[in-house]
Structure formats: structure tokens, C-alpha cells
Image (cartoon, rainbow, N blue to C red; front, side):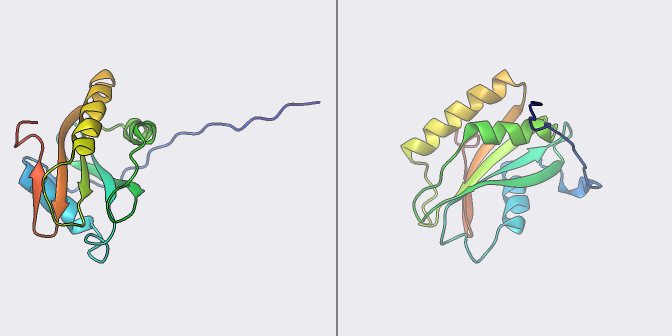
Amino acid sequence: MKSSIAEIQIFYSPKKMNTNLKVTSSKKAFEVILSSWNNNTIELLEEFKVLLLNNSNIPLGLYTLSKGGMTATLVDIRVLFSVALKSCATAMITVHNHPSGKLHPSNPDIEIYKKIKEVAKFHDINYLDNLIITPQGYYSFMDEGI
């Protein structure tokens, strides 16, 4: 009897990059991310996304890792890094919204940031920042020295 297993395929098909979107600051990252966020859910459900960047800090794309409830969402680091590695990203910025409107990180926010930072270093991916956003503004872990 012949055994059949699935063939794993990995491919990458980038679109022409918009060099005007070069991310040079947390403010620019916030603007790029907010322009792609669904305005109908940003104050309703918490979502966790990753902005994947090339070596020139030009976005390769924005990936929605998870959508949760009003107060939390799950972050699976294995899925996060499978996406980052498959896209050949050399840098990334993680971001999640706080439907409550509060821009300060919770203890779980800080813990997941530290965990992602450690894994990114292992994979030689430059983890530029972690943002918490609302329609009115953002909180940057790097700007705040976390």
C-alpha cells in the first residue's frame, strides 16, 4: 500500500512596492497601518497584526494574525513567524488595537512583546516596534523605551 503525504509548498509573490510608504518612524507606521484597518471594527474587536518590511523598511504587506473579542485576542508566535519567514521579511512591526481607547500596555501586552523580541532575534528579523492603536492615536513600545 502506497503512503500518501501532503507536499509542502512555499511561494512568495510580491506586488510592486510603493516606495512612498517607507516606514521611518512610529508615526509613519501608525499612518500606514491605520489606513489599512477596518474602521468599523477598530473600536469593537481587538485584532493583532504584523506589518512586514523589506530591508529598506518598505512594507511587504500587513497580515492579520488574529481577531478576538472586546478585551483580548490570541497571539500564536508560531504562526506569526511562519508568516514573517515565508514573506522573506527582514523587519517587522507588530500592532494591536485597544477597543477601550486606552493606549497603555497591559502586562500581557508587555510579556508577548518580550517573547516576540526574543524569537525575532533568533531568526535575525529586526523587530522594530510594537504599537497599540486607536483611531485617535498610538502607543509605541520603542518610543517609550520598553
